[in-house]
Length: 506
Image (cartoon, rainbow, N blue to C red; front, side, top):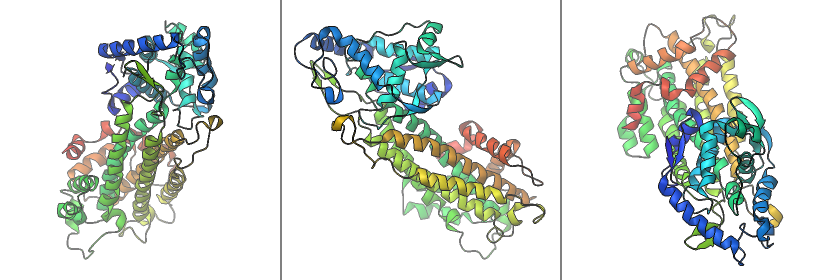
C-alpha cells in the first residue's frame, strides 16, 4: 500500500502503482490538512470578493464573475471544455502514474479540494479503472490541461475508460467497478486539470527505464571490449580519481569489475596495442555523463512529485494565484535527458560497428558470419542500429525553447514540456533496441573466441542473455531475436546478476 501525504512519494512508488498495481490510500494527516483548506474555499466561494477559478472564469476570462448558483456548473464546464486531447491514447501505466501523482499533490493540502476528490482518484487506481487519455494537446503550462481533463471526465462519470481490458464509457466503468460519479464543488474542476502530472508521469517512467539502460550499457560495453580484445587499463581508478565526476567514477568501477578475471584478457596481455578506440576507452566519460544527467533529472522529478502545481493555492485564510503549473523545470530536464540518451545510443552503435566491421574488429570473422560471403551474418544489425540512432537524433531536438502563445495571450510563454516528455518516452525504447543489438553482436563475437571465456561475471550475464537470444550458426531472420533481446533488457532489474547492482550501490 502506498500512502499519500503530498511529501514523500518516490519514483519507485510511482513504478509500483503504475506498473505493478500496488494499492493507494490517503494519509489521515493529509485528510486533515485538506479539510482545513477546503473550509477556506467554501467561505471564499460564499463571499463577495472575486477569487480566481472559485467564483470567476479561467484563463483570459479570469475577470468574469460567476454567480453562486452556477459555481458547480463552472467546474463541470472547466473539465469538459479542457478535455480536447487528440492522438493515440497514453499507455495505461502512464495514466495510472498521472493519477497517482495528481492524488499525491492534492494530498499536500493546499489545493482547497475536498478529501473525497483525492479518494476517488485512489478508488480508480485500486479498482483498476483507467481513463482513456489522448496523448497530444498539452503545451505544459497551466499544466497538462487536456490530459488531466480527460481523467477528470471519468471521475464525474463521463469520458471513456479501460476496465478489465475493455474500452467503455466512463459512466459504465464506474458502474462496473461499483464507484459513484463525483459531483464537483467550487474550485475542484480547476484543481483537477491544473498541474504537471502528465509530463512528469511520462518522464518518471522513462527515467526509471533509462537508469536501467545506463547500467546495461556498461555491461554491453564490457562484453564488446573483451570480444574486441581491448584493455581495461582505461578504467584504472587513478584516472578517474583525478576527474571525479560521480557518474564517470561509477561507470569505470563497474566496467573494471565486470572484466575482472577474463581469460580473453589474459590471452593477449602481451599484445602491442596501447589504447582502444574512444567508444571503448572513453565509455566511463560518456556513460558517466549520461549517469550524471539521470541523477539531476531524478532530483528534479523527486521534487516535482511532491509539489503543489495547481492554481490558486490556499495558505491559511488566503488564496494566492501563481504559476507552479508551469513545466519549465521538467521540460529542461527531459530535453537534456533526450540528448544524453542519444549519446548512449550513439556510442553503442559505434561499438556495434567495430564488432562487425572486418576493418575494425580485430580479426573476428567479417560481420561475425560463419561463412562470410555466402552469409551476411550480423551486417544488417548495424544498419538497424544506425537507423535507430538517426531517429534518436531527431527526437533529441529540444522542445522547451519552442513556446507558442496560448489562451488569448494570457499564457504567453509555455514550456512545451509534454512534447519533451513524449519524445523522451519514445527515445527510451529506441535506446533499448540499440543496446539489445550490441548485446547480440557482442555475445556472437565472444562465441567466435571460444573456448576462451570472458570474466565469470560477464559469463553469467552472457549465459542468461543467450538463453533468450542464442548466437546464430547461419543466416536467419533477426527481428524475433531482436525483440526478445529488447524484452530481456526491459526486465533488466530481474535478469541482471545481483553483483552488478551491488557494485553500483557501493
